[in-house]
Length: 315
Image (cartoon, rainbow, N blue to C red):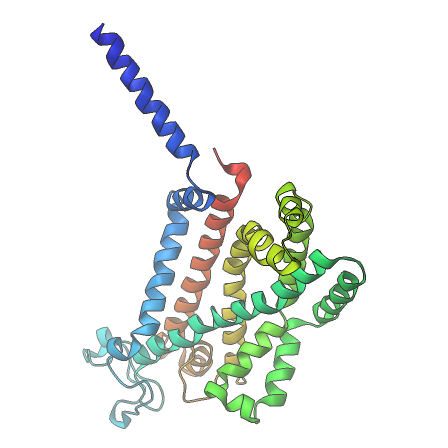
């Protein structure tokens, strides 16, 4: 009798555990799946670390990134010179390389956040309206997206930055504001297509018809019912778009039309460090490694999010 009672208790506990797992929301289940992906977790930790470095740069950096130590120009790394005041050495005008790498994280990590938000605001809004309205509205909006998609992205950014560089817009935030706009204008059309396709799939579902039948207007349907149900692929797209935005800023700064000097930027630091690559490789390698780490981390995170949010992989 006691054995039967114990077995029944175990069965009840197992049934309750199964019921609890079934009652977990999609986002809770996705979070648990994401935590099981070691590469995604590592990427997320590296991204958080770089954002913390960017936020607390004034407290972490050993020197002012723009201060020139004329008596220490072109100094090599500390393990070669023994001077640990300049761990990664100094550049040709005596600025501390480590401090500039730390402050450069502010530019790249901001570029990885703001233009992606603009992608969502522009492309997401256009795609949502096009997919929900359909008909002529859909055709007009998608043809506009096709026009922007036809422009070569990098060439468009170079032309725009070079044209408006000497205007008040080009002076905003040392050129960062202009980069935000230039990068956003060549990336939103992909989000418009993605959102439109998802809306076309969701808007005919039964719960949308039910919401419409009880009097929900178009705005409420799009914001409260459709958007939450298409959020998963959008999040994945955002994670994969960040490396492209960071690389675009680094490329523009590398060719000299990105962030205005003396503001520290990883792309500009690589360009200036090429002249002394063999004598002082740390000047170019340190920012290059940072760019590679951030881009790789976002790629790992994007892969993990794609697997975690894919309902077909749910057990």
